[in-house]
Structures are given as structure tokens and as C-alpha cells.
Amino acid sequence: MKSILIFLVMPFMLLAQIKKDSIKVFYLGGQSNMEGFGYVKNLPDSLNKKVKNVFIYQGNPVVDNDASGGLGKWDLLQPGHGTGFSSDGKTNTLSDRFGVELSLAKKLQELYPRQKLAFIKYARNGSSIDSIGTAGFGAWEPDFKGGKGMNQYDYFLKTVKGAMAVKDINGDGVEDVLIPSGIIWMQGESDADKTETIANQYYSNLKRLMDLMRATFRNNDLPIVIGKISDSGDDEDGRVWNFGELVQYSQEKFAATQPNAAIVRTTNTYKYTDRYHYDNNGFIDLGKQFANKIFLLNSKMANKSKKAN
Image (cartoon, rainbow, N blue to C red; front, side, top):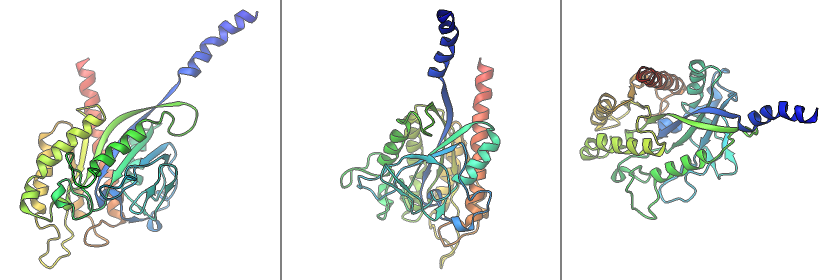
């Protein structure tokens, strides 16, 4: 009888051992309008709370050559992952600001019902891709050699490596399998206000950076959605980004020519809290638009895969 009982119980024991949770993970990167300048105190009740079954690993955002850049830990998503957020790798310190992550999560939950979701976020206020255009905020240039040779690209790598190394991101005792499902990128303003040369190089700089980011997630076809920069016009000549049109052209070119890429253009309708940053409604809408675009790209990929098989 004991042998029979063991025989009957064994399959259930094996299932318990091999059970894993599948979690779609999205990378959020860029500069200040990705870092997030919305005010938590002005959030609607529907977004001002912890988000069940959505998790976030945000790398500590710092200037170039700071060894603390990219440190982070997994946590349940909630307001406070905007500018002013910090992490020492053991404790996350929330701020009074938020970015696109809250409305992005809510919309993705509607699009992927009953699916656990996760965000890996590393964004740095004022950062440019071109190292010549950093103005002290930081650069994403992969071949950066200034100072100690550490920059925003290195912090991206550190953030992703730290996030993907965790086998149980929500601490429920079940191993999590993180499935890279997209890159969401909001950046370009700091490459648009320096020189015409830097702005003209934006397409090639963006393409190379996105290629390397895709390679980091080991998927050369990973969907990418970028946000098109806009201009508040809050300057004497009516243009904050003097070469903004050149960067906008490069962003449109990227979305039109690169596989599995899309662009969000609604940014030109957003209001601002200062000359650089969207207001609360802007960040909330931008998150929704990113969700719709990344979902559509993933759906197209899934349909192509079905037809191929």
C-alpha cells in the first residue's frame, strides 16, 4: 500500500518541482520623460496604488563614472519610480514622482489578462546618446571611454544583468522565467539642443544602441517602440530643441526602416509642467500609447510565427 501511495504521489511532487511562472518583461529606457516627472500627489485613485502581479527592477540612475549606477532590486510596482528614485541594490527609495510605468502596466494588464508582467527600467535625466552632447548628465554611447569608462550604457547592462539573474522576482517560492517582450525608449531631446552634427548623427547612434540592446536580451527581432520628442516652445525663439526636427526625422526613419519597430507621436499634444517635461496627463497617456504599440508589435510577431509553422 505504501508503494502504491508513493507511486501515485510522485507525479504531483515532480510537477511541483518543475512548476515555473512565465512573466513578460519590458525594458523602459531613455532620459527625463522616461525617468518620469509626474507628481504622485496628483495621480487618479486608479493609478495611485500598488499594482498586483506587475513587478519592477529599476537601476539606480546616476551620472557617468559612478559605480552605484544600475544597482536595483525587484519590487511590486507602485507610484514613486520617477525622478528622485534611488536604489543601493538592497533597498529601493521611492520618490514623489512617476513616469509611464503605471498607466503602461494598467493597459498591458487589459491587453494581457491573467499574465504576470515585469519592467526593467533604467533612465537618466538629461542623458544623450552622443557623448559630446552629455552636458554633464550622462551618455549612452557604447564605446564611451571618458573618466573611468562607465556610462549610461554600462548602467543599462548592469541593470539588466542584475534583474535577469534573479530566479524568483516576487519571492513566492516559484521560479520565474522572464520573457523579454519589448524595448520602450523615450529619449532624444539632449541630442537635439547641442549642434547640428550631433542631431544629424541621431539615427545611426539610435540604431546601433537599439541593436546592442536587442542583443543584450538575445533577440534581434525584439519589438521596439520609441516616443517622438516634442517641444514646449518655451523659449525666446519658440524652440527649446534647436535641432529637434532633425532628431524627429531620425526617429521617424528608425520606425519606418527597422524591423518590429514603431513610434508614438501623441507627444506633440501634451502639455508641460516646465519647458522640458510633460504634465501628469501626458505621462499617463504616453504609458497607454506605449502599451498599445508594443502589444501590436508582439501580436504581429506571434501571427507571423503561427503562419510560418
